[in-house]
Length: 281
Ligand code: PAF
Image 1: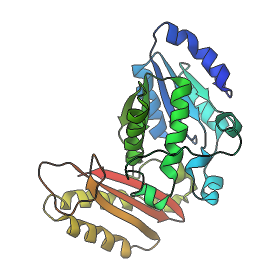
Image 2: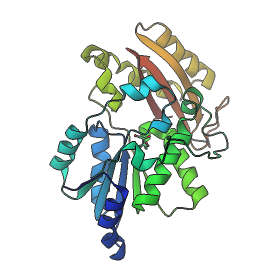
Image 3: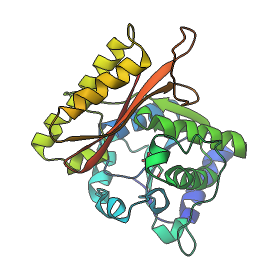
């Protein structure tokens, strides 16, 4: 299996694929690969002639130095995992200096407020950093299709907006959330939980499912109050936010209309680990 650390080497490898008009799939990741990532790679493999998996812990999307430092890294394990999966995948695992000249800095994008709510509100500058690195990867790999998981639903809308602004010819492929048997959304951050914490954290999805059921008969305010109440009583869980928004704009909702699609988003700390999840309502 091919592993590239340098942009130039990856570009040289990909050149014949463009010439032959082959489909190139890109799965951008920050490594510590889990089943969720593997499902994206599998989908990319089924739809493209070659798949590039990037593994890069992007410093400009972290607003907290400790979070960046603690982010799980396991490049040798990731390489083995991908090797077992397919030989049609190439890995791009650059150093920071390969992606950013001098001090890593995010480009400033105008997302019309989409980057200021939910994850953007609690992780200032996060989406500017995400859009910066994803644009760099798109410019480099020139993928036909790029694959992102819906656990980071807001990220998908941000990347969609970046693609429209930059007029890049990439098809964005959103993929469903993959869950552990308990219902906990798969995340590299789950590795930082103790076995007990990981079991307990399944509570987050069970509350989301109850909220989804309740939403069919109750008002937005009632569902929000119900979720807050569940977490206020639950030891070891620190609810950062729960919010119901319109699915396409992420604008908060007060009154629901039958013609609209909604989604609920949640962020909870368990054992000091920040876990996010969401559900269609
Ligand atoms: O979702 C992630 O893992 C990251 O935000 C991404 C898209 C790889 C950009 O660093």
